[in-house]
Image (tube, rainbow, N blue to C red):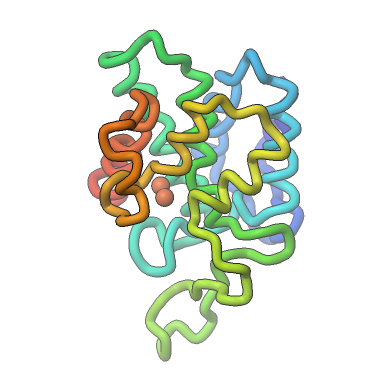
Length: 203
Ligand SMILES: [Fe+2]
Ligand SMILES: [Fe+2]
């Protein structure tokens, strides 16, 4: 397999003290192996994401779901696995590949930019009461827009995949009003898998 992470224990370059749990790593590796048609481009994208950004170590939130190291990775895996289950029942004609690409990377923006993570670990948690801070030094981009900004130049997303990533928060976000009634099936699957993961699996 050409994916850049396949041998546990893997150590993230920018956080060499952090090893990913073997169970999480094997789930992640199995998901990445489902990307077949664009295997080379995906491997290249993921190598960038895994070695240049904080994707592997970032939390999923400052204080809500999975606000801990590897939380973003765990959330992304939960969303991908849930999305594949729903897809199998409702829309088997949609490829596993599109589900994996969009689910694993929908929240990539939460990793921030190379050298500039979106979440900063709070070492004064008693005072501030949140495990992480939101890094305000980054130029403002919403999470989905930053995800697309990072992925776009490095990977040939389909229009449906781009829509799913951009609008994955659905109508919880006012900015997404414009997509109402225009959602592609892939977008609806990602929205539901994301919500189910955040509100049920990771509660
Ligand atoms: Fe999100
Ligand atoms: Fe999410």
